[in-house]
Image (cartoon, rainbow, N blue to C red; front, side, top):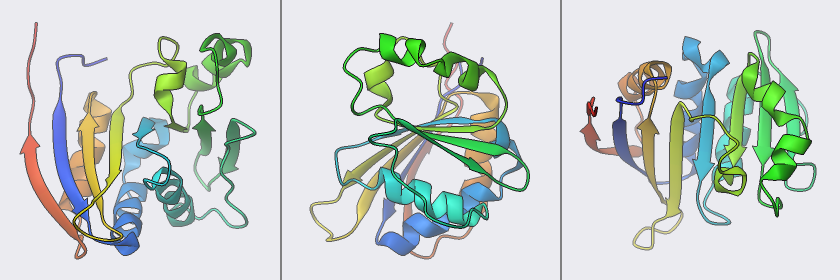
Length: 180
């Protein structure tokens, strides 16, 4: 784990197409197959929409369901498995441990977790944190902050940042903050 690493990118997704563009750029990153991405934001901020666009970009066909009630949905891509968690309904983080999710997070594949704070203390360090917030000044827009906390997360974020996002406005990027 690279606890000294912190890369932050601020974005404005002007519409759902920007969410789709980001998901497509994310899907093309080789290191994605072993990442843990924590998704933060209020209800309706676009977390599940981002996951749906990412699953489509990864070639997942069929219905892509929100795991709000099931807690986890599993998907197979051509190259790796994806686990989409929604911890919104967890009342006690110990439920995460009791459900056996530790083994999933220790194994290969992409893990996406909505409401990770509900499993605080049990989840490993996220490679990427994605914070989504509706933009009160632009209807349908999202303010987005993506933070990389590991070398793999930084590699993916850099790769996504190089992709063209015509409906995305990039903000400030803070690179490699070293702390003891």
